[in-house]
Length: 173
Image (cartoon, rainbow, N blue to C red):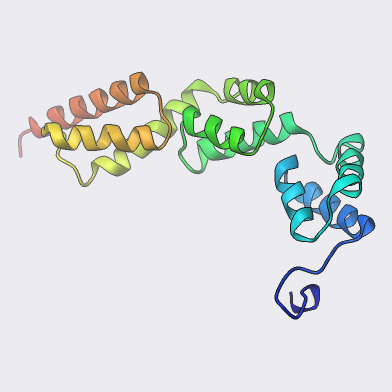
């Protein structure tokens, strides 16, 4: 908002107390990761020992938990955004989440839900493609890779779609 900005448009600096209040309420509303919270504090000119103290407080009082964040992020991105494990892993690494938390989060994605997410992505993309054409199958495979699905799973899903398409094409009109 306007009152939280300098005349030059930059965010107003936060005190340690202001950061703690704001970030604790943010964490209470939705899972957050440390890297994102540190970036928010940096934008509001809070760094160093003060930022470390805020982060320590949030961890101590369980507002912040990397494993909990990674699980929620992986579940949401798989279910809602239709992302595969490879893309989820890459994005969690970009947020500097610990490797053990990433492994645990990816393992927690139910296999049947994961496959359904891949099938949704493939079906959506396949609507505008002719899967009897090699070029269109390759295009669908690239789409699946871009969404972060493993090559074996992508091939399996595409093979299933091709079988459905062949079966539907052979139905009497």
